[in-house]
Image (cartoon, rainbow, N blue to C red; front, side, top):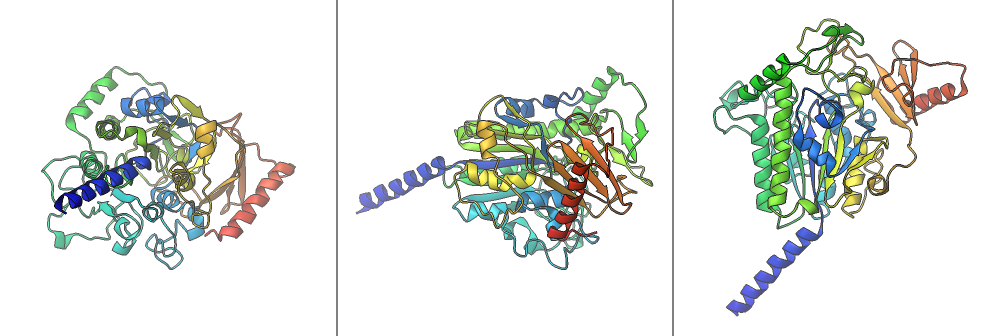
Length: 472
């Protein structure tokens, strides 16, 4: 009998391992505030991102990828729910509440969708959705939550990550208070710590159940802090570079013209190293070819400051217009790479897509059930990944919480139909229209109220804002 029990246990172990290997794993590698041109694969001269570049070479690079909003919180809501943030009144005037309710009162997160279909779910890093613990990852579909809380940025990238070492003095609802990393080694770097935690999860769990994991780095968000040796490297590199024109220009607030921040460059390299370590771990564990890896950012880089701001700026998104906070291309266009799991190599696709699409796409790629009543605004781009471009659908953006003093942006609703992008600055009752096929940098406003296509786009904006009950 003892031998029969042993054989039965061995059978169960082997069966569970086969199931884990049969279903694809998923890992989303999300970077904070990383602009489209902040990776060397997209021709950045100053930043060095060999691991991101290699991932793009081994997979599918979407060159027309966007986020549903150019700020952290609403963009992350879109990723988690597959819905336009405007449907939930995000961003609200008071980010603690959304139309009088908590985050995710009814919405099924992407993590919950995978968990419901047999996946072990993991979240590490920046969550930034909800100020109460029942709104955090471990209560929203993730079996394991490392440092996912209300915090939008760390007080320090070096341990201790919070200014107060006394847990009783830490405000758990604070924007800069990271919960769950109270122990650590003096001086350890947050990007490395979150990478370590993710590697530990992969190593311990890859042969049991298929996993769905999100490594959501706080980097490269402010504060600008990086490892000394890396900063020194980029300061030296900067000495050998020359730049034409002024450091800043007065456009959409004050806009940074050059990629020349050595601390930010060092932060980008640390994130790149993190990706390299994750990919290496997947290959060492023999699961790289069975793991879908998604690399992306939550919005464009911090390149603009507003009327009263004197903050340091991270990067330049040029030739794209503006950056974080703005609904111009520099604020909403992001890197998006799918790799691993035998996804096609060396493929570049200019399909227009937003981060609402990640929810249904990843379920679809894993041959799981979709939830169209949940991811209302997301559309699976599995066919595009496998076969290439198809006809674009009309996409919308809505920014109801402008920050003219901070980043220089103003209230706007946007509709994009094909290459035509209409922007309605509704507080000013003013329209702009750009043909992105001819003017990808939004320099030439071609709006004409008497043009039938213009009128059609104006009507689309009006109807959509009414449909989603967009906040004003």
